[in-house]
Length: 392
Ligand SMILES: *Cc1c(COP(=O)(O)O)cnc(C)c1O
Image (cartoon, rainbow, N blue to C red; front, top):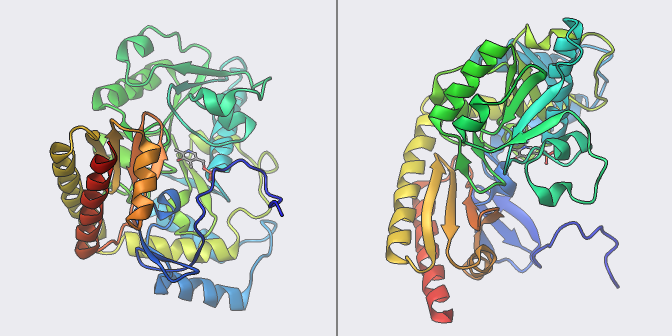
């Protein structure tokens, strides 16, 4: 009997039934080392005791009330985010796509309220990914996610990524926001250059435009900074968050300065589930761990070890791999052979990886992966490279 699911995913024939830390176990009891984290979602690994306790305690008290009432856990989570980041205002969502929707609406409403009704274009970049809703695919730079869904929303302009000349010559008069991933994830782990980001900040200041970072994949400690933009030493106006903040529970948010958020007043935006007590209880537990002493420094250290292991792998297998790029525990291995073949061989070696555009395989382990597990990952990479050479 065929399975009545939309065929939107090319699923691997593997089913996991439980997990612990960086390990996932199949029905047959086979253990895989998870260097994918459900695409940067299981930031603290599987079956994390603190997250289980937070979820279980909240589940016994209250699941849902509605945003018609104040939700203490939601207020607490917002306070943590505001205390630790550029943000002064938070809107909670259930996914990255919804965080993007909020950011787009926020930027447009901001200029509408200022009486600048034509200032409504959002500039985005080639190779970007921002989600699957109509606004998110209209913003996206990848043809694959847009084609066939016309008419797309108007008011989005796609420019080349990391190209200072093209942005310097662009007319920003009707632009309300510039939206970019500080490290493109789906696009193939491509970091924005410092020069490019600094130029964008300056252009936003000069032309009165809101700078929006999509940190849905790169945020919540993934790169060793809480947000990956922090290394540029500048401050954005709006940031979108999801994936890692829930550690596997669906939650996202849109963060903003008080000024940028000023247009979204009572009744202009909302969500039934966004910021629900269960999600926020887990979010608080995740952030407590991410902000605990030495945690982010540890991500940086582990990222360095893993990156240098992968550089050796590339050096020793230059017919298979081209290069390593990324930051912290958000790494990409650009392949010379088909990336899908590498991912297949990784399955055979009980290693989970994620494909990305530009023939890249992504390496996104739980942020609390141990040094010993990084060694195991390295050995499995070496073994899969050997397997690949035998097939060539
Ligand atoms: C995953 C992702 C999204 C979309 O998030 P969903 O939760 O799947 O809606 C948006 N932007 C970036 C950078 C992402 O990695």
